[in-house]
Image (cartoon, rainbow, N blue to C red; front, side, top):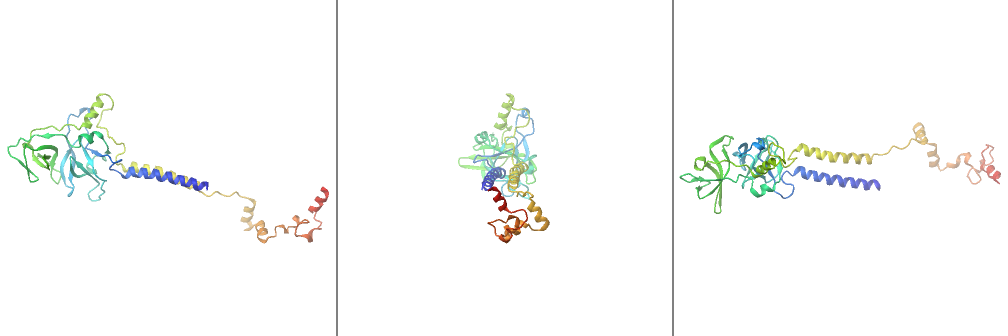
Length: 315
């Protein structure tokens, strides 16, 4: 009963810890219901950053998976689902960037992207808060809409073709007017010159650097684990294996002590005590005969071992 209770407690602890780790390991999207993000890293030292630049990470179409535009550094992608595993295309994440849905591929990052939560991003958004000024003399056609200076135009990234070749003459933008929102390409000559500002998260990190709260370097990652499958596997093994070993040791059969009867049985393949018990004649041995025994015919045997003699002497 005690072993059963111990076993039940160990199983409960193991399952609780395992499910907790597995939920952490398999949930690359969120640690609750909060928004989670992937950072577009900038390898420049934090203290030297003055503006964002064009990264080598493309934002890909959600249907064809072809690259659409290159994302600016220091900004973030909102994760909208679990990581997609594909042998042909490679692992990818479904993401949203300033309201546009698509994918990014893990192989386009130098290191596996970390999945993070951040209240600042929740407030200011993932994409650059960069409003472009339309200066073209004629309207631009984007998704069958005529975009001009009456539209609110926001920068998204640098346009590239399906092979990932950048087009230096265009930018990818989000255009909104009344209840209409369109995404597409626009000639750089139709908008005023601009510089991509740093994301607010990076600006906050620089402020902390100036106050001596953090060390210089790239923008610190928020999540220490990210989606590193190796770390998750180690965590799972580190919890389950010790629990299994404890259970095995707890229920390992104990070796019986080597008694005289065991040794006798190994040598003769039987025990004279077992035989006596099985035959029901435990008292057939004349040494145990007495007035109350069954061997009355041996009661007067002169073998020097008669219990009644001792009884008489006691009297």
